[in-house]
Length: 392
Ligand SMILES: *Cc1c(COP(=O)(O)O)cnc(C)c1O
Image (cartoon, rainbow, N blue to C red; front, side):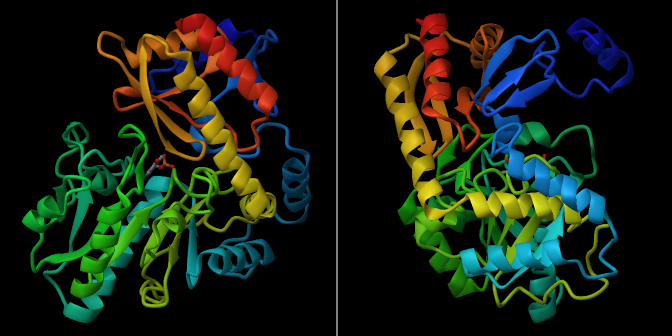
């Protein structure tokens, strides 16, 4: 099919929930993507932080094919090796005690919220179920995770929303204390707010927050759906901050492109969701887990250091261009935000870059780059050259 035919069919038969860019993607290689007519794009999006090993990665594709032939699905009524091995690796690399596997970020956060409320219910009974989240956060698209998201624009249309969320300003302990109370059971944060604009939390704030949570027996919940799995140059972003969450969620990059997510919980929280309290049919799917094992094998310490170096290279190169539309860059590793100057629209800038062969993302009022973690110097230089040529 041609790009025109695919666009027309999509518009006729798929619900209009997305404001898509007018590009059809057919296949990829490394950090390059191609449309059906063979037009090349440099990809600084990795499918919104998912395809950390890029496209056409041979060991990843081989592991998926082998596992699909062996066993594609069997449900959590039985034991399977790929999920067991993946859980062990994730726990050993983070110091956490146990994993729960699900399928998407919003769903993992739903489970995290259930875990926090049940932890508190088991210890203190009812009436202590409020979760404080941060303004400008993003936690998902289910009714409950929309309400957990600290942005008013998301609290619309779908009334009634789940009760029991309050919002504090990021990096502001006074604001947090102002919404604290006897009814609180947990605080939920992204350490680098992704959709909100790639806004890292301050180390001192996170340390103070962690201390307060420990004092009050509030769970410190970290949404690592976007920051996790090597994106920031550590396996998980909390490893930059010198704190340990009680529980965290992961998703996007965990299986390099297949749908998988989950929760990691510490010793205190590992048994909170006992038999019958939480479940998902597809969770811990062996094919997804086999793909995730290849991701884990790839993300060595040396590889993660390269992620940091590449992120630095991209940010320094972009700042050195001194483009009229861009201000400072921010972020961690290959999770990069670029401030867009007054008078420019990030959506329009993204359109122009995409038109010219460089796929980028927006976040908040800025630009966002999430290249595959395997992006090469050559691919970065090609993308930077397009950026310079189009935006100078
Ligand atoms: C993408 C994202 C989600 C939602 O994940 P889905 O897989 O789309 O449900 C939740 N939290 C954060 C921080 C995200 O970046």
